Length: 301
Ligand SMILES: [Zn+2]
Image 1: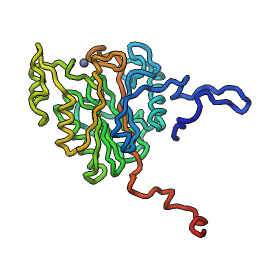
Image 2: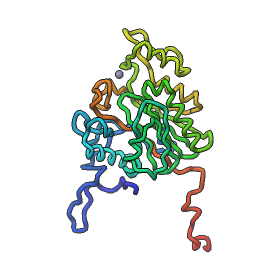
Image 3: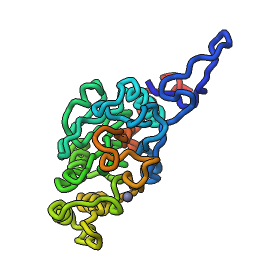
Image 4: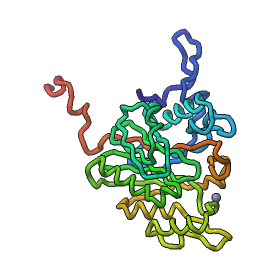
């Protein structure tokens, strides 16, 4: 099922009475999200959701996608339904994992229950099945969306500092290429996370982050009391080293901007998690099935 976004929220029944609003677009409130022009122009439905436009109560308010931090299940389900309305997919096809700050990949074809998938460990979701939304949850970590212009396949990567040291971005690129069996024409978008204004780390962590890409040593700001790290530049360098030529940035510091973003470092373990997701599409270069299967009467005329 695809949600019909054009349908009015308060539709009328046949007898003229007003029908209850459908889940996903309750009272006309939409899940708030940021988008990448690069992905939109390449034909990929996607979103970096903010914390706004959901139904969760404090401290998960309001758009929270984590089931495991203490929020009410029904609230998370409604939030996922709202995400589905934005992405144009059935909520049952929005997948994200039990993230463990590694580089493990789960390939999804849309046949598995999302309930089962979110119990699987991993930090990369990938799919070449049109209509499947690959997601990651973040609250300070770096969300990276990947897509192949040629095949329509997509991946989402969760890259916190440990994942960045382990080069999760490269793992995402490799997963996408393994899935499609070709180099492809990849695009990437790096989403909001804890930016160098706020990402203070110890010297040991700074050293590891300085060494995990070719971005150069100035990704570590040592002018302040403790090192501050620019994860955005490191992840972009990792993507480019992996062969991604087009990298877009969707900016925002999750720690500074409490109105728009959840932040683990600011709010602690018991708090909300945001979702970043991208939907696999049809291979644009191959004929669509409808065109192959034209009615016979068409060809007689
Ligand atoms: Zn900041």
